Image (cartoon, rainbow over all chains, first blue to last red; front, side, top):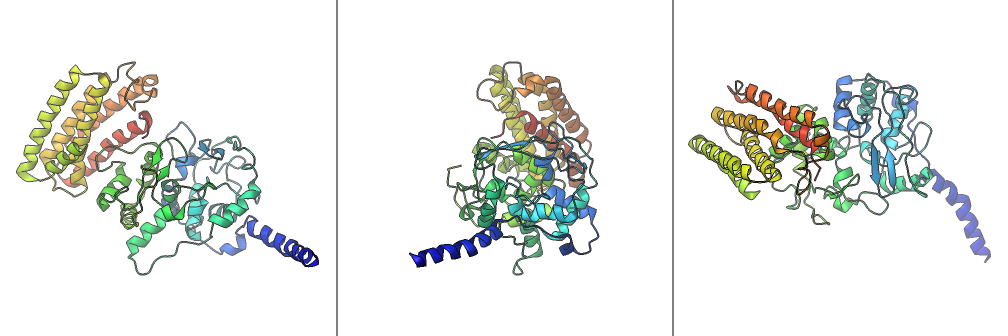
Length: 303
Length: 160
């Protein structure tokens, strides 16, 4: 009995702070960032590679640079409402520091020190290089300010408790920046970076577990549409996926939205293509090259 | 679908075969229209879209570098697209949002915009007829045409 009490005390004394430490929102301090001259052209590439506008663009208008938000993202956990990320001082991110923006993108932590929900795909954005995130921030600062705030998320208990996301992050966020594979070509590595990092392709093209985390063994193998009806295609090199697509098929799709049967993609992928079409052709080539190298994985749900 | 795919592949064999394929496309197009006129509008517009996909396919194969550039094939594809753009609006009569169709009700709430998009496709395709001198010239002219297809599908078609 006495041993049990001691053990329990030890757990409380050591365990609670450790647990809290593990699940506390992480931040990047301004002092960590060091000097940087923003490259706006690279920021623009990151903006379109990252598909920021697909979710954050003001509703019911076609200008990808007006980032007033407001889109609703339904999910099994409730409805998320996408915030304003235009440079508006009160309603957008006009008041943010570079370090606060980097903390959001790379750590999923808001300027108020709260966890963001992973509907904001920081599990992919964490792979981005800090310099690219800083260029992206500089680019967004040049875009039009848009007034207005989206209403709060509509999430039932317990999903409305952001503190719980610490545990989620502990399971699904590893904090690792993209590491190039020196055995692969420069093109492959560029494609891998764009697909896995800013492009966040896996966020929709992978099935998720009951906690909402990507099932890593099924990465890129498609699954139910997280934001609507229907399903998302398998984009691995399995016959269920894109095995019979050539690299030029993939490249052409990313540029024009036209599939090998010359129908066009629509819905969210239509929005993705609008963004990716803005990238330099070499970047689309690199993405196609990397996608063609993804290991074949069968679909689980017969899509 | 596989028929269409093998047709597109067939069309991509180049040279004399290409010209033969164009003739087949033309005949197929005429048959489609004749057949379509007797059917319901949903079947008619599906047939129209299929022949558009075949035309976009002939163009796309050249743009992807899978078949050599052929000026007459480019012109035939543009002709198909501009003709079908002229027919498009009449194949979406009021009430044809019911049935086996992905056409969204939004079409009839914004019919003027919807029709204007067909008109723009027709204009772009007709204007591109004079830009088929080289593959690069055709590429530049065909881009906006494809954007018409994708843009209208994005706005007015239910995603799969």
